[in-house]
Image 1 (tube, rainbow, N blue to C red):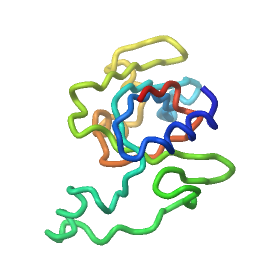
Image 2 (image 1 turned 135 degrees about the vertical axis):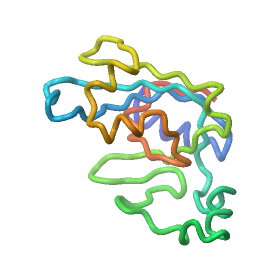
Image 3 (image 1 turned 60 degrees about the horizontal axis):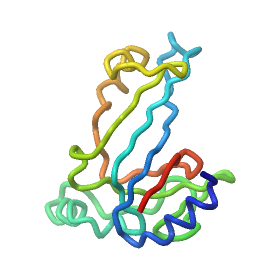
Length: 151
């Protein structure tokens, strides 16, 4: 699917849940720098909402667990709150489903061959292994890394 088509479909979401399949290239540990690591994730996501309006963010600010929401650390908004532009690439701001565990599927590949999560983790730096399985409240994905989209 072309980036332009993905952007158009994302811009029409307006906070609804959509099913996406996303490819992520993962950086291996130095000892495995010759390996190509990919993670393919399918789940329901939302686009077009504002991070500062998430209940968890509002609650954390109110309780003093975090400070106020800051501007983007990199890039600039091309179409707020959907699309970020950085170094001639477009990125989509996404929010995973609240009930992420129920619908998420992850496929791990090393040099194009499907492997288990445990095998995949052997190629990562220890600090990256520890983060595997964490689901952030919000993340940014290069539009050209979105493989499929279904409303």
